[in-house]
Amino acid sequence: MLRYLKFLLKSTNQHGVHSPFVYAYVTRGLYGKQPFRGTRAEQLLFRTMAYFNTESVRVLQPDEYLVEKLRKYFPGTSVNDTRGKITYYNKELRPDAIKYFRKEGNFGINDILIIKDIHSSALSESTWEEIKKCRQVTVTVDLFYVGVVFFRKGQARENFIIRP
Image 1 (cartoon, rainbow, N blue to C red):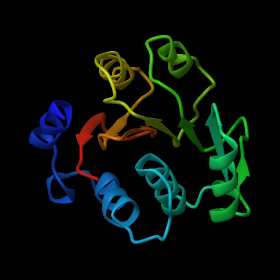
Image 2 (image 1 turned 60 degrees about the vertical axis):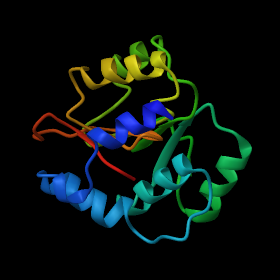
Image 3 (image 1 turned 60 degrees about the horizontal axis):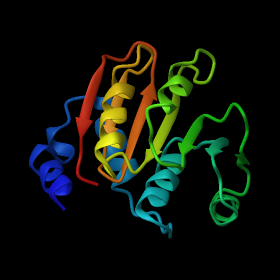
């Protein structure tokens, strides 16, 4: 509860965002009214996929229930494609994950990484802070339940804390 209160004190809504790219993503993607069901993290994944019209998604540590939902909501989308435009990190965020995020070739230009439960523990929070410092990361969006990482060429390096 204390983590969430700290988050609320630091966060803003779409009116505090000065990046046109992030503003459009928040207002049209995250705050959209798509009829997706699932956990908050899954709903944010689905809204992001719908906004960016994603044709492929890679789920690290997938469960069958999530894969079924992905196929239901996005029937033409390739699930668990090794070069998915969006990667969903569906496990506890630990320091050893940073090696994966930093490895060249795991993420290309304009790829998106969505990480579940970035505030679930002090260890997850410190790992999230390290991910934000990775060289290839340009934009991060902290939505408390998930963190969204963008690898955009030509984008100014910025970190946003937004109320979902």
